[in-house]
Image (cartoon, rainbow, N blue to C red; front, side, top):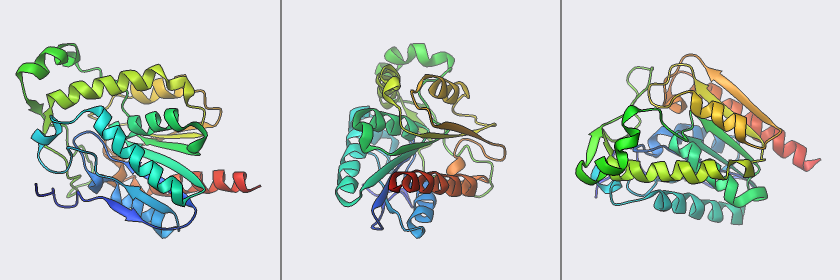
Length: 252
């Protein structure tokens, strides 16, 4: 199956500090590669995987589950952990939820977590109907390209595959049930104007993690896909500062 242009994974072999970057639901590595390339230029080892069912056709997502998406993040983590002494995980939207799940599962194997407009629930009115709808309706209109900056495309699907969306709700539930396992340093970026993920998601995460070192940065000039929007460089440079601070502390 041909890939959406720009949806191929990105990998860079750098130094002993590694970063796994995860794109979001119905998205693709295209939304994360510029961030990954920025970190790579700073000397980090970087992996931006393409999650199963993503970057091809929306129908392919309905043949996958959250376990498939998480398994790919876990596989990439295990590969990067072989090369690096220190590993960070970063994610956008659902990728943020996958990042949290990885940190819950790996504990001290994850040195820090960076989230951009992370999702752990939805306030959509139709969420309660999803268990039924996903049986009879293949898709809903999409949520892609919520980007303020003109002329930017994230390489996402134009539809929401409902079987996959139902599975996403299960990922949210299992991640939220184990949220107190998160005690790693946490940096959360949240857009003031996000038409996909409600601000209650970041608020819930920050209120429930066990991390003593946690910070929220509010983005005022970007929509949901902030990693490639007007505030992108704020995210990129801030995440690098976060990594450098924590690796310097570890080295002392």
